[in-house]
Length: 294
Image 1 (spheres, rainbow, N blue to C red):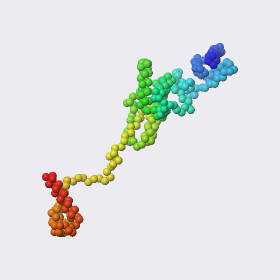
Image 2: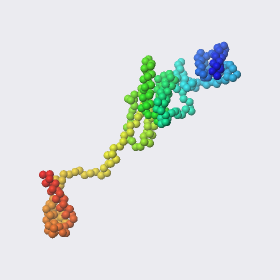
Image 3: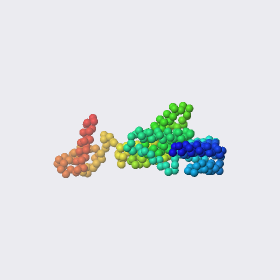
Image 4: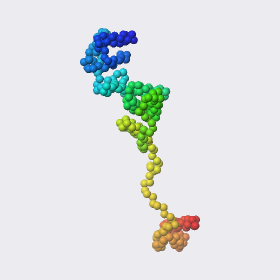
C-alpha cells in the first residue's frame, strides 16, 4: 500500500510536469493534495489530468468557499496575497472528549488538555486564531466538568513554555488572574449555581471577558428578622405609675404604700383585687432594685 502511494504520487507529479500542468503550489499529505490554481476551469483541467493517470485511481475536488478551504484538520483562509491557518472542526463535531468525572487517572485528563493546546498552536498561524481556539477549548472542557483552575493553569503554563522556547515570539494571550471578573451572588442551591455558571460562561465568550461567579451564603440574622419593632428601653427610675386602686377606687401615682394600707384594712388581703396585689408585688420589686442600685 505504501509503495502504491509513493508510486501514485510520483506518477502524478511526473505526469503533471510532462503536460506542463503542474501548479505553482502543489503539496500532498498521504492521500490529500492542496494546490493553488488561477481559476476554476484550470482546477477542473487539473482534476481531469490526475484522473487519467491510472484507471484504478480516482480523485475528487473541493473548491474554496468564502476564501476558506479545509485541509487535513485545519482551515486555510486567504487574506489578500497571504494565507492564514486555523483549527477546522467538522459540522458534526459535538466536542465529546474524555469527561473529567471518568474513572481514569488524572494525568491522562491533563495530557488531553496539553494535546489539544499543542494541536491548536501548531495549526494556528496567528495568535488571534490561537486565542480564539483557546476560548473554544475553555468552553468545551468546562462543559466536560473540568475545573476552571486546571484549564487556566494549563493554558498559562503552555503559553509560558512557548515563550521560553521561542524568544522571538510575542505572545498576545494572557490568562492571568487580573483578567478574571468575579461576580458576587447569593447562594440558593447547587442546581441554580450550576445554571448561573453555564450562563456566565456563555456570556464570557460573547464579551471576550472571563466572568467567574462567587457565591455567598446568607447570614442567620437575615433569616431571623424582627417582625415587630421593639419599644426603646426606658430607665425604670424615671417611671411614673398611674393606677386605680381596686379596693377604694382612688387614683394614685407611684404610691405602693396606699395599696399596702388597703390590703391591711381588708384583713390581711382578703378580698383584695388581683390588680392591687399585682401592683404591690411590682412596687416591692422596684423598691428592692432602687435600694440595690443605691
